[in-house]
Structures are given as structure tokens and as C-alpha cells.
Image (cartoon, rainbow, N blue to C red):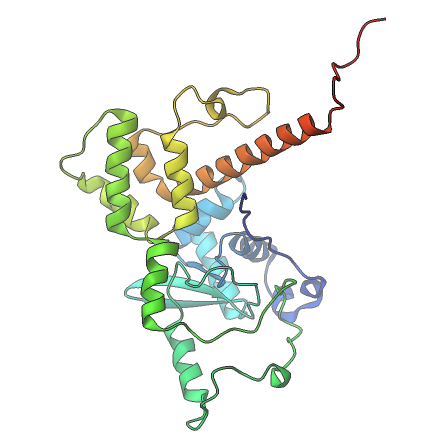
Amino acid sequence: MVKTMPTRILRPGLRTSEKWNATSYSAQSLYIGILLLVDDFGRYEARPTLLHAECRGLRADAGNVQATASDLRALASNKLIEIYEVEGREYLQMTNWQERVRVKQSRWPANPRADAGKRQQMPANDSSPRADASKCPPPTPDAVIPTPGAVIPTPAPSPSANESNSRTEIVQYSEAEADLKEISKRVFNRSIAIWNPDWDAGLRDAMPAEREQWEALKWLYSLPGNHEIFTNTRVPGWTKRRQDITALIQNLNREQQKSWVSRRDYFDYLAQQKKNQEDEPEGYLGMQPA
């Protein structure tokens, strides 16, 4: 079964949200771009250079990175996002996030201030493992991003479950480095005996990676060069191109996303081809000349 990326929904209440209307059009545009980047926990990196490239890289009127940084601060000051720091790197969290969570672990760390606040608010004598759903307050008017199927958060898994999940859902640096060396050897006939220091920044920037996207990248780079995904020009905009090993590592985040979309589109194409064949009546040969 082909997995699909989660659908993000803008609710009608967004139009009348005071927080939303207190921001500029430019900041609102950035907010929507961020909405399409965050994971199921509503988190992403808060680097203006990365957000500018991801959300505005194709727009000629997008301004510069400094303008994106200003819009990011505006979203934070109006409490549409929270920006926090973990181990010297800044991350963002969408506020009032109520998306359905499909994975057990976020790719990005949680806000330590939020975690500390939750611990302080927990009653000392509360031994209940789960909150009472009937006592949960209704969503506020500013909760602008809830989607159907939103669930009440469940208790965090045990440390052993977290460790097991990190091996299955998340790809770390060492595993990715080994995979890239294998790709370089198998696809580009280039054995990497010593890791190029210039590649380190690109790899660290992309780690940890979601396994689903990482496996899609490995799949795309394992295909033969004459595979139809690279040669089929009958489907507009479908023909894909692989990077060389240096460009692959330097653009690893983008290549993972491109590979995921390529695999999804390819299997959707195959499924449609199969459906078209099944829908044809037996013995049907198309319109014949009179």
C-alpha cells in the first residue's frame, strides 16, 4: 500500500482569528509554508535561511532571508508559533496543534519549556495514566489547524519503546553515512574510503531523517538508469533526474522529499495503469475503422 503525506487543513476560523489578522500578508504566507513543512507534532527547524529556501525559494518577489527572519519573529510574537532552542539549534512549534499523530517520535526535539510546564502542572497524587477526555476543555477559537481525526495525546512510551522506535522510525547519522557510501559505490562506481569533510554539514543538516523518506531516497537511487521513471516523457513533469553523490549529500533534505514524491507518483501511476486495464471489457481493442 502506498503511504501518503498527511493533509494539512486551514479551518474557516482562521479568517477571524485575532492572532492571524495581527500579522502581515508576508508573515501569513510564511505561516502557510511552514504548515506544509512541519511533522505530525507541528515541529520544524527555525533557521530563517532554511525556511526562506523551502517556503519562498521559487518566488522572485520573496525578498531576502532577513525579511523571512522578521516574518518568523512576527509569527512568534503573535503566538502563532513558538521558537525554542535545544543544544544550540533553534526549532519551532505550531501553537494549538491538534493534528492526528501517525508516528511515535518527532524528528525534532520538543520545547523543553513546554515539557517543564507540563510537569509542574501535574498533581502530585495523580496516578492516572490517561487524562479524562470528558474534562478536556474545548478547542479555543485560535486553534486554527485542527483536522478530522484529532486525538487526545496518549502517555509517552517507556524508554525501551522509545529506543526501539528510534531504530524503526528515524534514521541517524551513522546509518545514513553507510547508506550513502553504498549508493556511491553501487550507482556512481565511486568508493568512499575517507569521508569528505565538506559533506559533513549537508548530512548533519538532514539528520535525523524520517525513515519513510530515507527509504524512498534509497529506492530511487537503486533503480537502473534506464528505468521508466527517468525516461517516461509521456507523463508531463514526471521524468526524474538523480544528482551525483556530492550534490546528493549537499542537498539531502530536498532529495529525500523529491524521492518520496517520485516513489508515490510512480506507484500511483502503476495503480492507475492496472485499474485502466481491469476496466477494459474482455476482448476490447479500441475503436476499429468501419
